[in-house]
Amino acid sequence: MSTLKIDLISVQPGMFSGFLTESIVARAVKKGLCEVNVVDLRDFGVGRWRKTDERPYGGGPGMLMRCEPWFAAVESRLAAATEGVRPRVVMTSPAGRPFTQADARSLAAAGHVVFMCGHYEGFDARIETLATDIFSVGDFVMTGGEIAAAAMADAAVRLVPGVLGGGAAATAEESFGRGGMLEAPQYTQPPDFRGMKVPEVLLSGDHAKIEAWRAAESRRLTAQRRPDLA
Ligand SMILES: C[S@@+](CC[C@H](N)C(=O)[O-])C[C@H]1O[C@@H](n2cnc3c(N)ncnc32)[C@H](O)[C@@H]1O
Image (cartoon, rainbow, N blue to C red; front, top):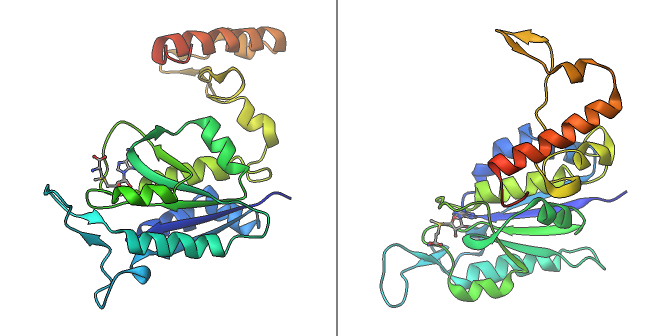
């Protein structure tokens, strides 16, 4: 049975409470398919006040995260890794590479992922040397890395075998799955809602025709919304 260990390092660990009690990750933990540790970076802070930030050299607005707490926190998680497992260390950053479904697949198979959630104006550049990957969840800037880490962890955990019902087919048939395109539109009851009708072909019971319709719709939607994937 493959399992995934996730460490979430943050100065605002409380941000993960809903994520850890209400999500697919909570179900995966209950099933024993996933282990999640939330680590408070302040436990590794500097001095009496457990400082994690400092003013940037050269001037500029805001505060930067200091090296010492991050090196100590990440190294403590690496020391707790299972023998033979080489953890991935993911730094969250708007200046990172855009996170994709392929990355979610690769994290799901990694066995152990440590997420680094930044704050303030971000990290001292030397902290990057800890990371195996620097990922962004989109071309926008949030105040902290917790939501980005939760998004990536969720995307990875649902791909761990056994977490979702329906097995591998459930995730292969969706957007960015086989062929890398967007999923075709889907419909459920009622067949006619306020004059908007479910396409006839989906009610036909002809599976070959349904497959052909879905493939064509997938190509149409991808060309329309995400020409970069088409
Ligand atoms: C205010 S941001 C720092 C932005 C940084 N000064 C810059 O311009 O690239 C604070 C933290 O939020 C997280 N963050 C913000 N936007 C993100 C995004 N799009 N993807 C991933 N992490 C993000 C990162 O952990 C970052 O260190």
